[in-house]
Length: 424
Image (tube, rainbow, N blue to C red; front, side, top):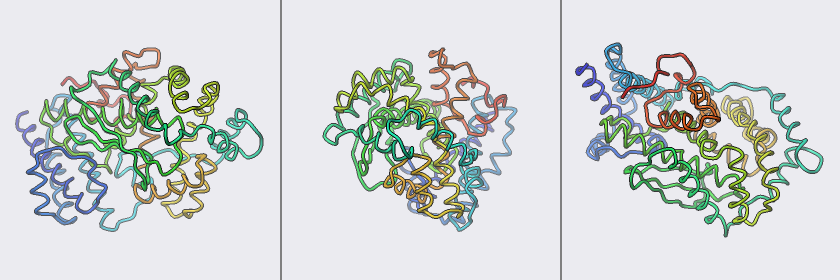
């Protein structure tokens, strides 16, 4: 047992250094690092080539496979699987960086340990028909939706006040169920010129920087979405719990670095998106926004309920973005065609659709982590008894998922032994 743990500790250090090394070739790869500064200094001095990185990652993965998992406890088995999947993903990413091209689905399997389902246009047309019955006015549904949404933009002068209120409520609701690390906090910046709408930069010591992109109009629903997804109980809480429980308490240093293009991102984005409904179940969200956020933004409070009825239907179109990305990145459609698809089936404005195609260029199949991740996390939590009518169980299972090593393929297979509760 001790020998196996010693091997995993050594491989964990090698993994951290390899992630940092890939970062010298891929500026988006290292999303966060708060491990030993001397490890980063060593990598910065050497700057190994992609060929060397791939060779070392392959050797580490081969050595990891010599560890007898039957002799490990449940927590160590989860750790072993996590390291195995992360190293395999890294090898795939390096292979892509050296010029190999994969299809959208093959890439997502190689990097994120999962592939999203595909849907025909008829699937999305049926949802548009459902939406059209609720939207005011007549004519083409995407145009009617765009006209309706224009009435719910947060004025720039009120943006910070609305976000501040949403963040405070998200934190209060999360802290009711999860013991947050002492001193945890984050700051918010408003930025421009990005391909994303919001981003959490985790800094270590339970501190984050959250950036909100103001290039395009921000609608009222984005306040709670971003507050929960980027903050509580989303990315900020996820990273803070991993740091506290795995890095600080267990010295599992592989969690001191976050490789963006890896299976960990499906868990991170999935829990962040599911975290929105964890903190704000539908009826409670409507009540809070009617009482607080709509008024702060100067929006008509009498429209709150219909706004979120429409919002719920629009959420059913989540996989439309995947279809646009899949077809565009596979070369089946052009950028303009992808943008038109997003305008019709993801109900994005033309400007936002163009912004999203730039996201496809930069992050490629990463898009599956949001919707597929959310669906897998919901199924995982509810399969373990965390149904909406049992909030205490729901939050307990969600917190455990936030703070333990998990991989997407385990969430895909209920009954797999990785669904067993780890006895750490």
